[in-house]
Length: 374
Image 1: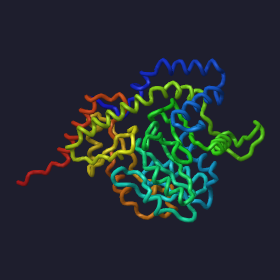
Image 2: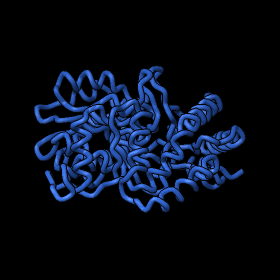
Image 3: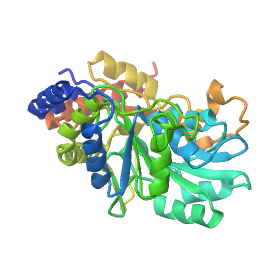
Image 4: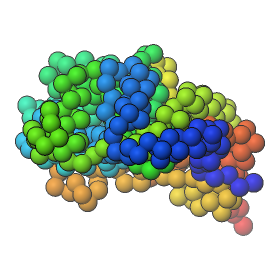
């Protein structure tokens, strides 16, 4: 049986009528950048996240960078970033002229913790990026308490955590701001790039919107800052609105799949990531660890089981950040050689999960087999 890594069409088939209607709605409107369809999605997304405001932007990386800039963070400032994340988290810090300070993560969840933040704070620290990686919420409550005592901002990188909850509250609206990506493969994905910033701070939302629209203020031709062009276009907004009503059901499907994986892998010699009981994960990715990761990946690909690696080189070891001078981060470095992402999408069947886990068992049996001594 062939099992893809991700089946976006399985999701799209459930909302095909809405997607087609969204296309016609936009083409008939004649408004392609900004306008009522973008306003509608921003209102829907803010309400979904239990936030007062949402600002659509061009992509998730811009959401992070514009938030940093809107908070006044720049040269001379430090921003604490977990090294186990996609490079966009740290790149956004560098792009505003600040310095990413990389920290290690919990060996159980591979997420940043309050202890990591507390140990990294210096007089130059301006913010911490709390990354809800793989759809797993980090302990933003305790991190927020540490940040609050130090007077630094909390920015949630929720690019992989659409709809996830921490202690019953949607991630994204817990810190100063939450940053989302709507890249097509996300839990809520556009049919192209897109992103959003959510916040309960009206002035912060206004500054993000201004900076992403050429720094415009009260008039089209009055610019209060040298901003950039980072806007969510009307077509993507309409498509996202058409899909948003299915997001909770899709996330339930992902949790069902994660439970199926966990039950089938309990007696298999791979390490499963922990989910904090206070968290409700949305399992953007289902990740396991194995010291035989590379051999396992090769065997699964040969068996037509799609798998991926997130991420093989931690941020602090990337050439792009070679001037930061970060010390060794043993958990991130150890995990980078062991992480393997298994097929995951809301409609994946138990039969497909059976195939994936059977191939893992078979591959590990062959990899770990000790040759008989003559």
